[in-house]
Image (tube, rainbow, N blue to C red; front, side, top):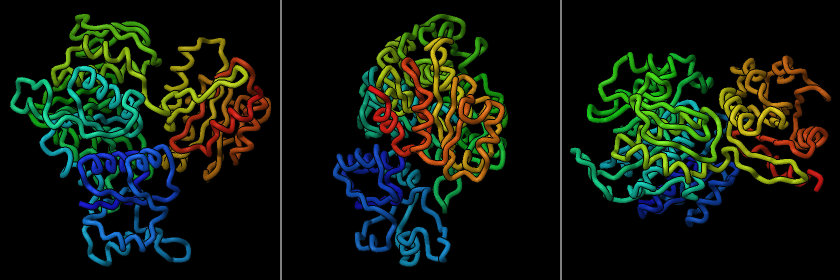
Length: 473
């Protein structure tokens, strides 16, 4: 069929486009501000991209329109539709669906789906799990909200049958690993994306309040996670972080599948040792050792989640741990973009306060107390733009020596929120309304040996390249 995707440059929709193309469908798509890395990946696949959401795209006459959750019925100040193509589709009565529903109906059917959910670490853990299965010869399919460096692409269909079947009723079903997002599906389907996936292995990595634009409180999100748990079959497995009270409440509301816990010594899987080199314990017995390049307790927990999930489909923990030794992480996860004049510049996707804190904690643990860390960030997610978590920012940035905040698009006072750190020239924190000023502030503070971490869930105005260009050689 010919599918036309509205909002194709998002990480999920771009991955879906790649899967559809690999399956033999004709794929076209549109987005506002067509941007990399997804635009580059899609063009390499021969997928035509159109800038904007103009109604003239109706002339493409696809078999179905797949609607991303960036699309809404919103109106511009002059009363015209923000997404005229969507209005034209509705007026004409043409077939449309959401990305998760199209995926469930055309890709996931007949597969053993392994869904990785959680507020933090979804992309990294999904990538770890896919690499473990690949290293075990299982040739999994996957859809990941980022580009794992081991694979160089965010999505693929994988083997049509499992190369080494397991001795279960569905043991020959091919494996498919998917990043399972709790954000809503589309303007016409307000359920979380992950309820469409029907996993047989569900990873619940962690859970705290996020997405303040669509959820009222933590209990609201816990309800969505329980909807996911309800879809796991009796022969399936729920792999849950035993350190999270919120997940304990989710499971206490009802669970009809095997539960495998990880995190603490009382759980099924836990780690002993430094996050960069630790023993993997299973029910009190040492079963493997992980030695790798990643840092931070959060990545140790991500690894345990991936090892436990792989164990459910027959991959021994020792084999999983050996695979993690060659795991290269994901683009934009503490990705070193360059070093100029002794100053290292990193790109990281962190945007929630907890993610900021864990990223900086991990780097601090790796570098030691004497190294200087400069945190450069923009509160860009819908939750952060609303200011719902601004009071947590001083805590989130505490491991950094200096912090620089991009304030464009905020309707709350970032300087006031960061006041506990001290704000202004010569202080621990500074703010700037534009990228050039932000770069200038960092340039005035940076010195050889520093580590500059740029954190955003967007392109951040190309600040990484600007910093590398501005640093004295």
